Length: 348
Image (cartoon, rainbow, N blue to C red; front, side):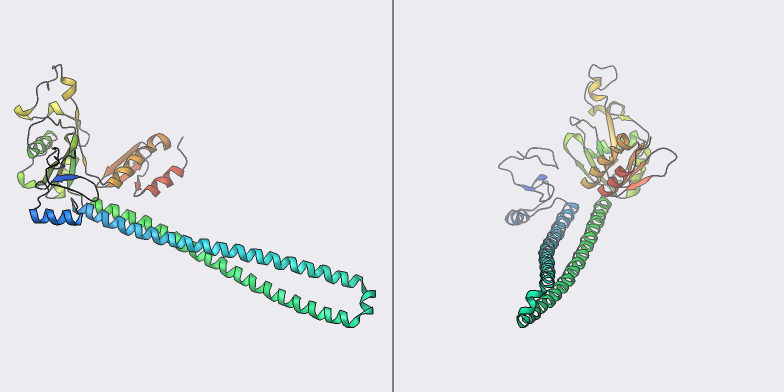
């Protein structure tokens, strides 16, 4: 059975549900805020998005697929041109062989002057025929050389176009990631809160914010969503509140049993309790990152071991890395930027 991402409960077979076409997350019809008529329309079209970023990502992926199809068509054209070039090369070789054969024939004619004298008219006719053939082959040879040069120019032009398209794709990926990340600029993710905690999401967020020294009001929160494993996704009304919390939690370690959850905290949360290990766990407050940004951040962290980077971090959706305290930070916008850093020599 699927699990509703909004209420974290299983969706039974007889309950009406919808699934996001892009991310695959499932929701009860009511949890998704759908009317009966809207639900029937979605079931008929089989076309539902749980959020605007999902819909944008789905459309952008479609455009990316169309662009890749265009690139494949260009590659097919290049393959055809390469084949034509190979055929022209074979024709040039044949013409060169014919020229060599003619040269041999001319030398043989020169060596047998005595026989040529016996049949002057025949030799003249033969010489006229050979000269005509020689000029035709020479002319054909020149035309083939021109065709070959033209094909080379076309291949170079297609290579330049493919290079430009590759750069455009990289730029589009960066813009898409920035656009998706910009849509999450007011959001944070709180992880490490026990799933068993029987408090409403707004109270949990308020208590966690208070633990880092930030007072939240009801009007500060736009939307809260409880995700699997106790994670809480919070969208604030402004980026200022979100940035205040991220700045306040910097350099602090927050534990579950140190947060004032009141009577709602499960038994065994004290330091002296036998169950202390279960509830003395860290609570993490982080920016809400897109899937692409999370992937780049994960790959960037490997630079610590492989290339001696001391710091790798994420701020406002941007990923940075530094070798040490005195060096300038590198901005990592894409997987291609990571590849360039990996090609740089490892610091001793």
